[in-house]
Image 1: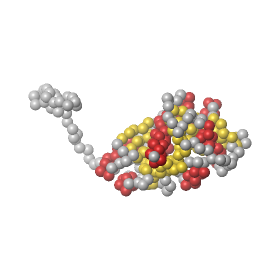
Image 2 (image 1 turned 30 degrees about the vertical axis):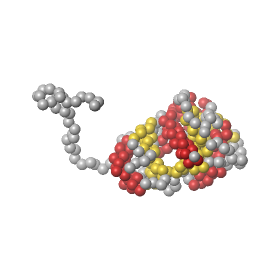
Image 3 (image 1 turned 135 degrees about the vertical axis):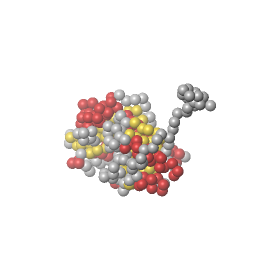
Image 4 (image 1 turned 30 degrees about the horizontal axis):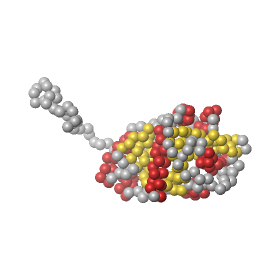
Length: 295
């Protein structure tokens, strides 16, 4: 029963993770074996990733070419999230196309909302209001992406769809805003996203205060599971101290910065392989050919 419960929580958290990108203006293409999460106007791996669900050995070549063509046509560099242990044929396929796993797995950390006994910090946390929109946006974007992200955040924050809620949080030290996070609920699963702290304030507990505030106040509405992605062993240990546990681990494959977003040339063009049906009677185009796909 515990395993079934954990699997249910993992799937709910992963669905919420995808919905977070969608509510900020992205989209997801479901194909056999994976979800292709895409945000054309925010061209960073956080918003452009393939969630591998299971690709068979005999179908992997077509799958990878289809998935990569989807991103390369948009000049996007996706990452692939593959549950551990990675099947050998999936690893070989990704390496064939130039992808390499990061040094540390990506870990989906889960919590039912239990709070640690004590978090040592002087940080003060509050829910951001609309006047903080520019301040909140500045924690995550450069000048180039900021207008697009600001608009997307404003829409999702002010006009949520049914079954969802997005709430930005701010943490201050000595009255100055030093850390921010986005808390997003989809149905009964809440994700704590994009926790960021100004370099000058790191190590003073502001990020921990944001996470515990999100869990303890139910700022995005009632939830049965909370999740956060950890991309370092230090962060995993830190979240465990806050009551989280590892739900599922992924190898995250990425392209080197020098890799070209293209496939090798398929060779000289050939004629079309499909032709419309022709009538035996000259001048009667299509006569005698079936025109319906129904049996």
